[in-house]
Length: 134
Image 1 (cartoon, one colour):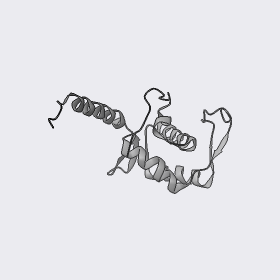
Image 2 (cartoon, rainbow, N blue to C red):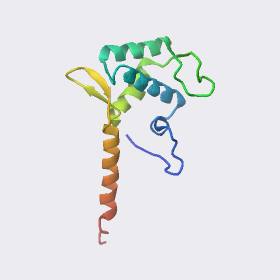
Image 3 (cartoon, rainbow, N blue to C red):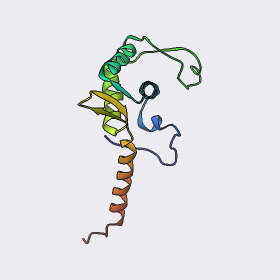
Image 4 (cartoon, one colour):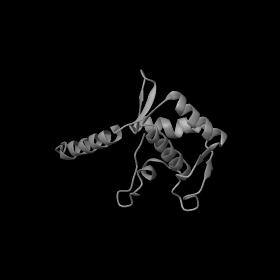
């Protein structure tokens, strides 16, 4: 995965840094809110029900902050396969969500923060290396 951002025009919303489209941002926020409302951890069945409700267009929420939808009940529809490919899998690979293979649960994680710190330290090491002779 490649991380590209403009440090002079960083949005305040972390989801806008990570995801490309408004729809992905909305679905990712809903996913995190759903996990938070379940104590920060959910099992595979709950995740599957969430993805299926999105796929069938049965997911209703009032949590969308976007101006036309703010405070209103909105039905959300998002393809199940795209949910796993474009939302959940990237969030797992970036360390935003952890999957426990033994308990078969998903939980919100701080590994993203740790990895970003590690990337910053890698840059400091690279920056301080002496120039190579030609």
